[in-house]
Length: 119
Image (cartoon, rainbow, N blue to C red; front, side, top):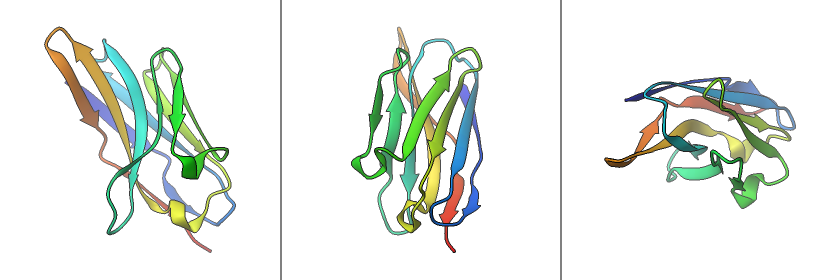
C-alpha cells in the first residue's frame, strides 16, 4: 500500500501563487508516474500535470506556462508550483501515484486539498 499526504492548498488572490506538496510513504518502491488532478464543483476530475520517474512532464493546456510539476525521488514527494492563479483554477487538487509491480499496475490517490482563487 501507498499512503499520500497532500499539503499547501488554501485561499489566494487572482495572480497569486501556491505550492502543493504530496509525500508518499509505505510501499513506495516501483512508483513510476506521479501527478496532480483537480475537480471543480459540478465538473469531472481532470489531469493538471504529471511527471514520470525519468522526469518527463505533461500539462493540461489550461495550465501550461503557469504551473510547474517536479518531484524529489529521495523524498518520494511530488510538487506543483502554481503561479498566476486564476479563479477558474479553483478546485480540489488530488495527488495520484502509479505503482507497477509484477502483480500489475495500481493507482493511489491522496485525500485532496482545496485551492480557492478569489479576491
